[in-house]
Structures are given as C-alpha cells and as structure tokens.
Length: 461
Image (cartoon, rainbow, N blue to C red; front, side, top):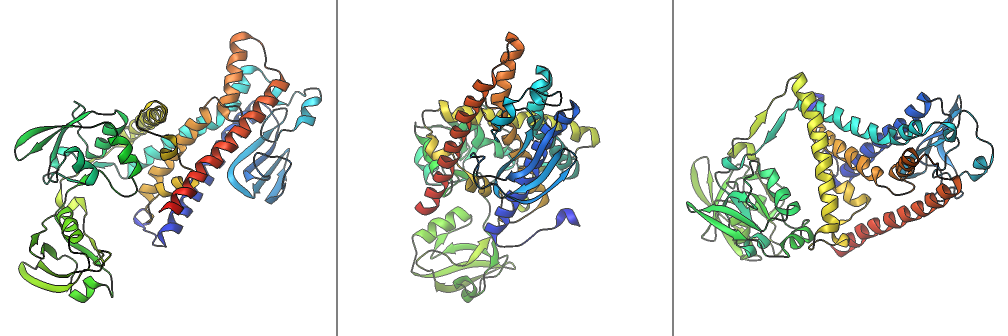
C-alpha cells in the first residue's frame, strides 16, 4: 500500500518538499562519504553538518547552528544556511578556511599527515557515495516497478506537433521513423537524440509515405526557450474528458468524465491537438460541442471563456490507448540494470554539460538554472517511483558537479592530489588556501548567477 500512496497537497509545496527531502538526504550521504574514508584512515573529523552554520562562503559571518551535539571528536549539527553541507576535517584547507590550525605543526590524526592516496580517497568519498546511492536507488526502482516505456512503433495515432514543430514541417499524426539518420525505439528518447545529437533531419511516415524533414538551424534554441510553454512533439491520443472542475463552464454545460468531444462548432476534434486548435479560433464565443456519451451522440451548448479554459482536464493516460512495453527484472537483473543505468545517465549528463558549451544554438543564460529549476524537475503530485527516479538523477548530478576541477569542490582537491601523485611534490598550503578562496568566490558567483536567472524567469512569466 505504501508504494502506491499518492500525496495530494498544493503542487508548489509538493515540489519544494520533494526537493528539500532529496537534497537533504543526498547532502548527508555525500558528506558521510568523506566522513567514512576520513575515519577509515584514522583522520579526525571536527564537524559534520547538514547545511552551513555560516553564510557560505564566508566562514566568519553569522556563525550559528539550529542544532548541534558533540560526540567524541566530532560535532554533529544542522546549520541555518540551506545550500549544502560540510565536514570539517582536521588539517585540511576547506570551506571553513581555518588558517590558524594550518599554522601549527601537523598532527598524526590530521588530513595533511596522511599519504596522498589516502587523501585522494577521502576527497573522492562524497562522489563515490553519490554514485553508490544512485546505483542502489535504480536497483530498487527496477526491482520493484520494472521498466515501462512507449515504443515508437506502438504510437498508432502518431505525434501531436506544437507551433515550433509545425514551423519546421512536422504535422499532427506524423509517425517518427528516424532522427538524424538513427532509428529510435522509444518515444522518450526522441527529444534527447534530436537536441543533444543536434540532428539535422527527421524522417516521418505521413499518409503511408516516408517524408524527410530538414531541421533548420536555430530550432533547438527555440525549443529550449519555449520548454515551459510547449513540448515540440507529444504523443497523440484520442480525446476524452477527464476531471471536470465544479462551477466552471464545462460543468455548467454538462460535460461528464469519459465524454468524447468529437466536434466544436462543427470543427472535428477527434484528438486533443485538434480540440486545442478549435478552441483558439472560438475564444469568447458561443459554442456547441458534439459529444459521445455511452455510445450516444448529443449536443451541449455554452460559451467558451475569453481565456480559452473550459474547466476540465483531458484523460490522456497513454496506457489506455497504447501498448506500453513493460520489462520486469529479477534480483540479479535489477542489479545489472541499476549499474548500467547509473553510468549511462552519468555519461548522458556529461553530454548535456558539454553541449552547453559546444553548441552554437544554446546560450548559458537560457539553459542554466538554480534552486527553482531543480524544484521544477519534481512533479506537483508525489509518487514514490518518480521521487526515487529523480533523487537518483540528482545524486548523479551532484557527483558530476563535485568532480569538476574547481578549487573548493572535491574535483579541485582531486586535481591537486593527482598532481602530487604524478610529480611526487605536494602543493603548498598557501597555494591551496588561495586556490580555495578563488574557487569559493567563483562558486558563489555561479550560484548567484544561476539563481538570479531563475528569479528573472519567474518575474518574466
């Protein structure tokens, strides 16, 4: 019963709570990775905090914790600044910037006294933990729910095309044959292939014939800019009425769940996209709907509001109209799939990251996002399967971002340690301090820029 529980709260709050839960869990586990290897190599950990107990990245400002308790050598706590977390490892230049400690002679329990390969594992601990968390979550997902997807060959009604798709030559009802010369099996992979492989052409089946569609330069940028408004292409489904909201025009007209609207003011509407087109032409006008209810046709009279909203949701459950393919995994199959999905997703995210800097059509200002963008990844209705999927994905993102060779991130420390392992020369504490300061300022700037973009987009709506 627990796995099928659906939590119905205000959509925005559900998204925010899911984001907070996922990030809190992943930050704790990431920091535990550092903590584990530090203790494994008998290195003292002075602090273990979820969130910062200072105004990051300024360790001397607003120093207080919401909760803290000392056990052994380590102080465990909950900070007030909710944008990360940290472990303070003795004898290490980190975000706490404890320069006084670094002036003292190294002690045997300090990070700086450990061998280079041990320090490397301590620094990689968080990334390793994030990868392991993703693997475990994917194993659980595939073991419990399996895998379900829509094969392109089962899309008997083809696609619905938005205005951008229509502009490049796609039409409602087209059936996709290939993208960029490559055959794609799953509908969910079409946009990934189209955008990140920068496909210049698509082949579709239209009225029994294959038609080649050339994709003009600039299309990808248009799609990404309009990603909140349109979908480019979607699954075309027969049009049935879902939930009807009380007191709306649809309710007053007598629409019922399960009705099939076949015409609006004489315009045929067998599919949802056709119904949307008919609505655009009749906003604010008196309308007559032809509906089929329990096998009988009847007319409903009313007026379409000026905003074009009748007050009902379409019933677009793909399972009712298509044969979705479901793969069930046994114990060992789920383990293998968990590992392969984790590393495939990591590779895919690298492709997206590279695309951000190599594509001619993408601007960072249109693609980067901060905490709001993260929150919008989560759906407004909670289900365990979706939550675990997204938590696994965010865990991979955290592993990837922390691996970037930026001082202040794990990857920056790893870069210096790799230099030490190869050259045999240790980077001085003074260089580490300066590099960490520069890196933290850079991270702060990036954080402000990304979150500023989110705020700008919210006010621009």
